[in-house]
Image 1 (cartoon, rainbow, N blue to C red):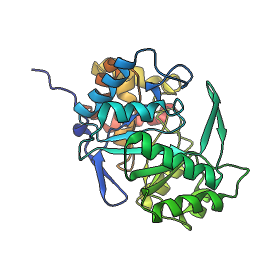
Image 2 (image 1 turned 60 degrees about the horizontal axis):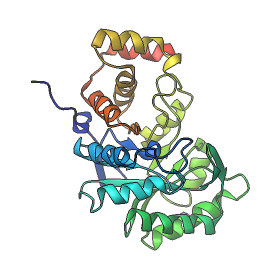
Image 3 (image 1 turned 45 degrees about the horizontal axis):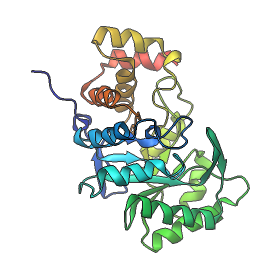
Image 4 (image 1 turned 45 degrees about the vertical axis):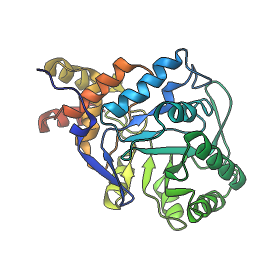
Length: 284
């Protein structure tokens, strides 16, 4: 009898010392419309995706107010509330959406406060377990933006602070203002420019959440070779690489398809050999 794929097979990771989740999460960006804009073509399928990831053992869901905008958060609230006790929902603020595939910075303190308040309402939460700053705004002093997040944390509206798309220098400046428990930067088997950040996070007890885990398959020919030999998909091998690369990594593959959810969950049960890891590491 074939085992049912479950995220629990990936093991666990602890965020901020008190949020323990299964180490294969879900990114909820693609339960929206084309261009990450508006509602998805099939609302029932989007809700089914969210329910299936939770049924499949996912205990960490990553979203943002800019996904839709607002659509991803609204669907999470509709499909999953009341939430299972072990489910951690992380969301982000700091970007605005004037149109499909268009993302603009807004790190003004008043915007971050309003964004957080809106996320609380849409997600039906009294406190956001992990609130991540989507990316620094070059037009706003970094200390002003982070100061707003620290204020929200003191008020109990967010439990932990995370950051995204930052450099090590920026992370150190941010950490001097408020504790940072997670970093979400681009990273995968074919794009390892962020390896120094991964090493930094691992050394400082910070969870590294890699975005775009599948983006660079074409840069890693070893993925297809290993997938064929294993009877797996290239997406599963890309995720298995991240799970094996470092215990500090928390992959969050996203999709708008239930079938793809099943595929991604299957990665949790794949253990790559040292030789396979070497081949994947040499590919990029």
